[in-house]
Image 1: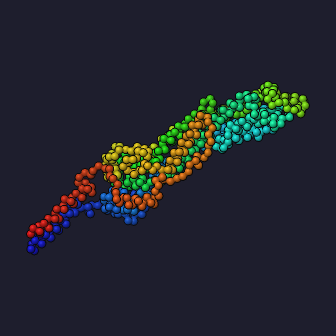
Image 2: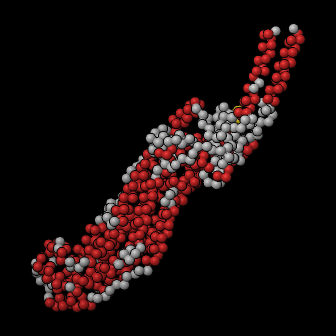
Image 3: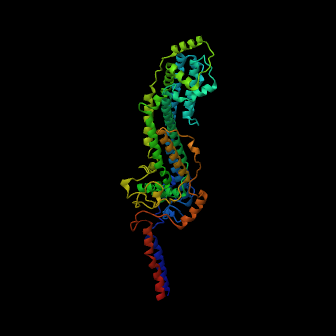
Amino acid sequence: MKTLWCWTLCWYFGIALLLPWAAGDTGNKAKSCAEVKQVYSAKGYSLSGVPQSEISGEHLRTCPQGYTCCTSEMEENFANTSRVELESLLKESSLSVQGSFAAQYRKFDIYFQSLLNKSEQILQDTFPNMYGDLYSQNERRFRDLFSELRRYYRGSGVSLEESLNDFWSRLLELLFKAQNPQLSITDEYVDCLKQNDQLKQFGDIPRDVKLKATRAFIAARSFVQGLSAAADIVRKVTQVPMSAECTRALLKLVYCPHCQGLSGTKPCLNYCWNVMCGCLANQADLDSEWRNLIESLLLVADKFSGPSNVVNIVASIPSKISEAISYMQENREVITNKIFKVCGNPEKINTEKSNRSSKSEERRRRGKGIQEDKSSVGSAENLVSDIKMMLSDYQDYWVSLPNLFCNEKITAGPANEDRCWNGNNKGRYIPERMGNGLANQINNPEVDVDITKPDMSIRQQIMQLKIMTNRLRNAYNGNDVDFQDTSDDISGSGSGDGCPEDVCGKKLSVDTKLSQPVAHGEPNVPGQGASAKGTSLRSWDFVLLLPALLMARW
């Protein structure tokens, strides 16, 4: 009996010595966590509590639960870091786009305002010598015209057509009184003058100016409004926070390989792309309407080239007014007779001498033309050319966002498809590449995206794009549109997932215990990794049962 017990004890001690060897002696050869400690410290976290060597990873919620160098706290900190880093990258890109649009907006706005100022200055420099008291005593009327043009351009609730009609009516009144100082012109008589446009006291010049100036100012105003709206939409979309699902996927993509001791292994390209497409699914839905906006801006930009371009039209305002005055002076008798037939003969109050003096003054002022300044045309074409180039560069902005992150510096690239981080281990990434947009994420293997719940703040910006595009297309066709601040048309913000972050965080802690992330890597090669260790231990299970069987038989 003693012999049997001695034999049994020796058997168990032998097994105890063999088990570490059978398991690969993991206790003595556990990997160091020096690399992940460097990464963790570089992100600003304390190294207190960071394992010196690999530990069991059952506590992990997102990263693979094999042997790991990360604690639960480290995993949570890495998740927050990955979210902040992506949001910072998107913000940096957004600021660049906003800056480009804002810079071009300022350049065009300064140019157009200076063009308008120059046109007014030409009028102020030439009209006193040409029209004497007619201008000097009524200078405010001419200034008011340019003030109204500026107000319209800046987006105020001004009817450009009404402003131009009012100017021509007032000019008609001034000229008729100046040509007929011997007549008593009552307010009722003036109303009759203004109500009979068919008399064409200025010929077709008012109609021509109204048609061309309206189209020019509508184009200019819509153009700057479009540039401003584009920058504002980019700014608001960038403020949309990343979802909890995206944060988990980013953690797994960027920092889980560090936890697994694979710090030198870059993510697979398609793996990275699928994560980014899932995270930026709502943003990608802006693409269609964004392209429509860019194309509409490019169409309106064409209004600034050609013989009837905006620059020539604005520069011609003084000369057109001068032509209109000259037309009425040269056709004074015919026009006066037409007016008398329609409105009657006013009473005479002045002497014939004053009438002859008036005629003499008209002859002295008549016939002096204004040379239009077309020196600004070339600079306008260069400016618009630069803007059009910028617009073309940003046409695919929203669908190109994944490339900001999934570039050659971040991913392993096509040449290393078998030696990249696939979300579970080092190996090929099997799932297919997802398309852009919310609808294409229904089968995204990396980010759980609910395609039935689009982000409402982004949907609001899509509506803003539609509104702005409609205004630009109306402007291209010469139709006046009521411009208001587009940011006030629809207001609201939020992630649109209908779940506050603190609540979603609590749900996350429960859900991840029930279901671990699905791995998409290829199966491990037998005899390697954690799975191989598990196989070796199970092969020795029968050895532990053998002594008990022998004793039962004994």
